[in-house]
Length: 486
Image (tube, rainbow, N blue to C red; front, side):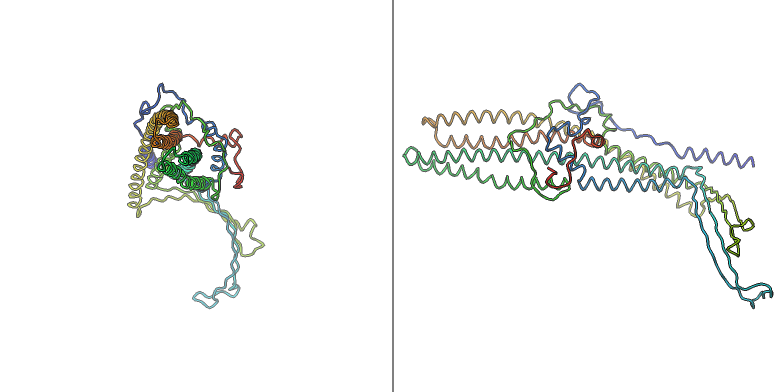
C-alpha cells in the first residue's frame, strides 16, 4: 500500500510538470511608436469615445445605428452567444452526472425447455424497476478543468472578435461619411464653378456681338463651361453609391442619407493626437486580446490532451428499487443499490493520445506565432497611421497655399483681362487651375480625416463606447426605420 501511494504521488508530481501555467509570450515592444509626437504619456486618442472624437451629430447617429444593426456586428454577437452556450456545456463536466430511469417488462419463458419449470412457477413474469444513476470523474489531472478553461478562452476570444468588428464598423462608417461629405463639397465647388462660367459665357457672347472679342473666345468659354458640367454626373453617381454603401453598413436598404446642407462647412479634426504607450496597445486593441485568448485556449486544450495520458478515475453509484409487482416497487425490500470506483488507463489508444499531444503542441506554437504577428501588425498600423496623418497634414497645408495663390492669380488675370492687358487664354488657364486645385484640396482634407480614422482604429478606439452607450452616456441610438436612421 505504501509503495502504491508513493507511485501515485510521483505520478501526480510528474503530471504537474507536464501542465505549465500559461504565460504571455515575449514580444518586442518598442519604447515609442515611430512618428509619435513627444512627449509620450499614458493618454491616448483611443480613450475617447467615437462621439467625443468626431463631434458631428449626423455621424454620431450613423455610427450608433450601425453598431446596433450592422450585419457583421450581429453575426459577431451571435457567435458570442454560441460560444457562451458551448462554455455552459463544458461547465457541466465538473459536476456529477445524474440520470433517472425506470421500466416495466412482462415476459414469458418456456415451460418445456431444457430446464423444465416446476408446477408452482408461472411462466409469465412481470418486472418493475426505478433507479437513479450517479457518476463523477475525479479530475486529478485537470483534464476537465482545462477543457473548461479552453471554453472560457474561446468565449473571451469571440467577445474580442465582436469588439474588433465594432472597431472596423466605426472606422468604415466614418470613412464612408467623410467620402460623402467630400463629394458634397466637390459638388458644391463644381456647381459654383458652373454658375461662374455660365455668366462668363454670357459676357463673352455679349462682347462678341459688339466685336470686342473673337469667336474663338466664345468657343473656349463654352468649352470651359461644358468641361465643368461634365463633372456633375460622375459626382452625383458617386454620391448615390456612397449613400448606398453607408446604408448597407447601417444594415438597411439603399436610400439617401439626410445630412447638413452646408456642404462647404466641414468640422475640424483634432489638433492633438496622443497615441499613448505602446505597451498599453496590447490591452486596448481587441484583435490582440482575441489572439491572446486563442492562444490561451490552445494551451488549455494541450494540457487537457496531456491529461488524457493518465488514468481516468470515476465514482459511480446506483440507488433504486426493483419488484415483480408494481405495488411493491417502492417498499423497503425492493431497494437496490451499488457503489463503485473505476480506473481506466488507456492502453490500446496510447499512441493515438500521444499523437494528439503532438497535434495540439503544434497548434499552440501556431497560436504563439499568430499572437506575435498580430502584435507586430498592431505596432505597424499605428506607425503607418501616424505617417499618413503627418503626410496628409502637410499636403493639406500645401493645397491651402496653392488654392489661395490661384484665387489671387485668377482675380489679377480677370482685372487685367477687363482692361485688355491679358488674353482670354490666360483667363481660361487661371480658372481651370483654380477649379482643379479646389477639388484636389477637398481630397487632401478627406485624406487627413481618414488618416485620423485609421489612427483611431489602429490604437483600438471605438469598441469601449458600447458599455457607455448602455448607461446613457452615448448619443441615443437611432431607430431601425430607414427614415429615422439618418
